[in-house]
Image (cartoon, rainbow, N blue to C red; front, side, top):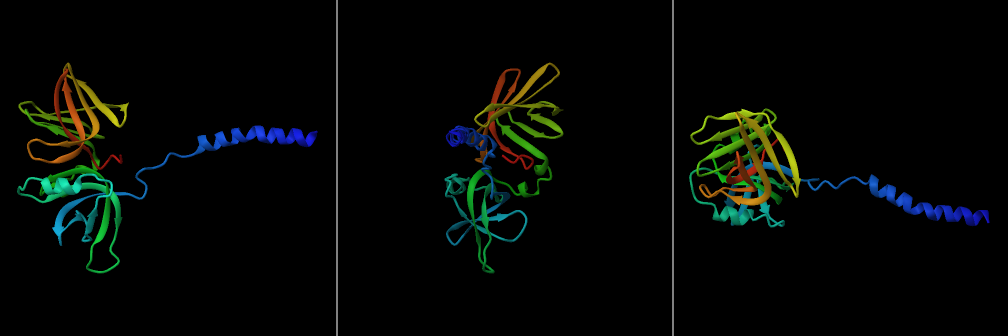
Length: 224
């Protein structure tokens, strides 16, 4: 009878142990093994090649995640400046001298014509950048505060709070001089209607309820 009782207790505890394993499991890091780099896109031998801002290694672009990077690079308006790209992916260096490695792109943060993007001294401190047109506005958020620049208005630098609203969406908010300022951000492909740049966030600037729409991207201080 004792053996039967002990067996029953062990069987009864199995779901408890299984539950403990479930609750103790760590969340999967979707960015594990991936690197985020900024650089220039070039065309070589009929393929799209990525060359980081720092270093000489070049990587042939593979877009198995269908980020639209290749098509966006093809459609980008021809204007002065290099074709700058901010991407996350798995980078494999070439094993042969003089040949290119490969990058399998998983996330496109930004694609634009620019000769200065690689030299931006504030990118590493930046958490979120957003901008729009008609009239022109720009928001730069970092650990130092929220900097708002608007056409025809003096620039503002203010402390802010961030609130998450689910599905990757969030907003930054601040108040100054009886003004309620909010930047609402959502993960979605966004194209700037003026310069044709592509960014991975849709953005809305709300000042006292008035809405202006634009695009945005994460800066170097944010690992999303």
